[in-house]
Length: 434
Image 1 (cartoon, helix red, strand yellow):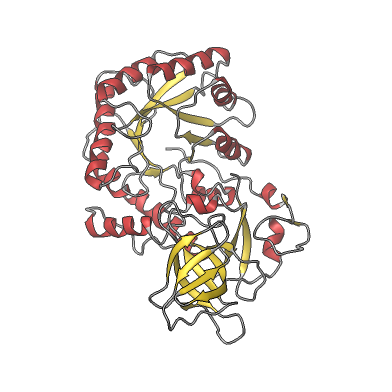
Image 2: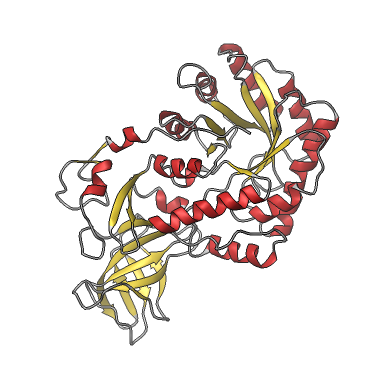
């Protein structure tokens, strides 16, 4: 199994930031991404405008190392979903910890990966339309060529890809590698039957310029581990049938893959039930593990720890992404308003949870845990409604650190996030490309 090289993020350090970028201080001088680490800013000293999104450096590094140990110990590789962060600096951390590829969802995301030197990309979508398909084939050529995988879930889709290969013939040694996508009734894309998947696999294998690389699914929309098992089994069993029917011609290992952020234990357990007559690469595409969260994925991880039959590494995943806001007003009993809203923090998979509070007047040496009884009940565009008990210590001017649910939709609200140490001193800026 060939891993991919580290990225060229030195060029990113030279990228100039617009002084009006959200997250930079008012009237900030012109800075590059690399300059952010040199400013000596501290969140707790009031150097940053609130709201601000921060990544705790030690936690994100520990999460990356934990997943690296988990995959290595369970005969897996990981192609983390880059759409979660769209931060090449974090891609590089994941690659340093052994990522086999970076997964993308759109051609724009593939372009970001290629720009910063990701040499193997898994496009977890079926490209449609001439522009997207032609872009896939252009990415296979030239000095900045990449190894590209994409999905197909219909004969029509394969036909469009095959026409693209005729318009833009790829190098013989670097075809467009196709994973047949399997889905479930009521779900998103993906062929709904094993027989249909094998028919698509035959069409891919017969198309010049395309190479059948394997089978995959995204099980994350299913409601329970047991329902996810059935879809994951479909991938493994159909891959086995394709091998037995001689549909797979490549000497490379066949790829079988699943999303795995919420059910990564079941992906391993179900894939490992099948004995394959040919080498198989089991690819997990989790992305949210890197920063984890305080709600949805935290609950999923607790289930994994309590139920899995797998041996897990020491430690575990912890929330690394926080959004900090300031208490603006306590206009009525039981309600506090803060300077954070839908423009700043995810709310599609649960409202944020207040974790810490801090009074920046010199009376506190570090943030304190938020006392019980504080709960976010609503978000407006720029305001957060926090239910507060009668004896709440909060007053206007205090700072509150929130945990989030679903990191993808917090990252996409920030073009730069602040990397901080354990004392909330800024150690760098993480640039995103949404």
